[in-house]
Length: 248
Image 1 (tube, rainbow, N blue to C red):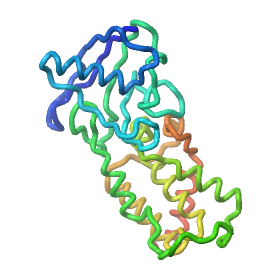
Image 2 (image 1 turned 60 degrees about the vertical axis):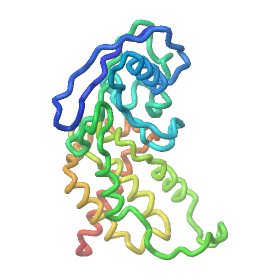
Image 3 (image 1 turned 180 degrees about the vertical axis):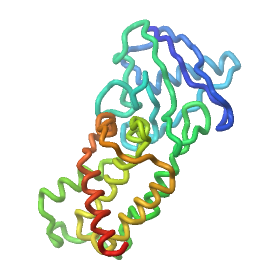
């Protein structure tokens, strides 16, 4: 297969950046999108040119490191998958593919396709944890949690913090990410002692990081590689009102 690529090249945060045309031939349909970028970089290195910078780690859809806009869609055209799970067979021979970084004011471009997503880390540090001493691992049924609650907590805990929700939202909102962390912890007994403080601090940090407000577009859910539901946003809103009424 052959693909015509338009890849965003930007030397640093101060650079204006631009789309650069490349053509790759002889690609295997079973090659992953990141492997295709590897092929491009090997070609550029052989030509004495600067390779394209992009994030990756596990390449198994688990870590959330990878993430680019492919033809205007976060992580590309395949639903519920990360960029590293996207394969060349998703495109047609001769297609033109536009590859850009996640764009959001809170995610400044570092270089080419790499953006600084440390704003997510600061939201987690503000309250997305359990600080009570839980001791050693208890026997499975020592703390009873209703099955429906544990299933919902697990659904929310699947968020890998890739930032696709922010990139897809026209307001660059981080409420799906923040809501997932809050919904995950508040459903479990260990997460309840600091319930109010957590939501107040995480929402406050989210606003400090200049993420936009939610306007119920649903684009975040549509592109989430782990199919996180917008119901976590509703839960976050309820938790925030509850904390506000208690003076947090």
